[in-house]
Length: 437
Image (cartoon, rainbow, N blue to C red):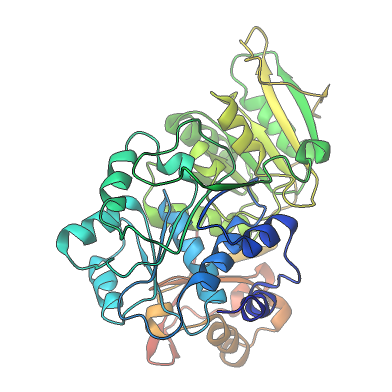
């Protein structure tokens, strides 16, 4: 594909009017091996997708021509969405754990041009011989520092040794670099495009310490969230059990809150990201699993309930706010006498108002629809159904997220009584809209 065609799709489908400097550098590079370093939220997916699509050979691809490896299910899904928006005329397949294997095998019968996968799931397909990568032209390893950690390294090695020796393009991307590159990829002559310090996000961050005079920080967290107001906030903790406890406390206190950690089912993690993004639950309590690889928009506040265990964790957590050209606020809740690592620093102290009222409840509610992309249901179909059949107006409909066999629709709270509890007809599907609790 030509760069102009890809950019046109980016404008029309992703509302990207112009590429940033990092994206331009990646698109324009003629290197066969690239390492791209750029902060979270800077648009690395569009960068490597554009470079990939320009390098693919023309004509039909009876076998997959491009492979993107990513370390998490959520990241695979998000990359797939971006590629589908940009790669007009090309088929994209996504493979990840807890996804129906039958759906993935059926997708392969349509001869996808591009595969986006977690390493473990792709290795499963290779073992089953359901995927043939002998004609591969382009390889991307996204969040490569995470993908090459212990637990992924062996899988990545086994996959890469099955790939053709000569590839048109190999691209590795991340927000942070690693000291030792893998020996199973020939990166000796790789061209590094380093925008890791671009945009000076620190200059757009207001970083504050919040002192807790008790070891238990819950009361201070409540006051802090009440004091910062209605903005979208992410509260980071270091353990799943702590995430559950903090989340339940905030729910009991009346905050609209979602939960995200690795012990949850995939559907519950998806719903947490969706309801944070659409405004239904503007507070997320999460482990560091949510610090990277998720498409979370416009986070105003990052709150370190527990101090980050490593400098890398600090970087990725803080990278959730002040993205691209926005400003953001970071708060470290520190108990008296708590050991503070040297990499944790702040500009000033913040004293939350313990008498501050809770922010107003969200004005949106999310509905789950039991049909999605595989049933040929699109966002436009759902808007049409809600407007023509249910009687909602366009301004009562918020963000719509469509998955393989489901969709999530945000509607104004005052319009919720108009949503019928009965089954509705949409194309060939029988659709039921159920409010999320």
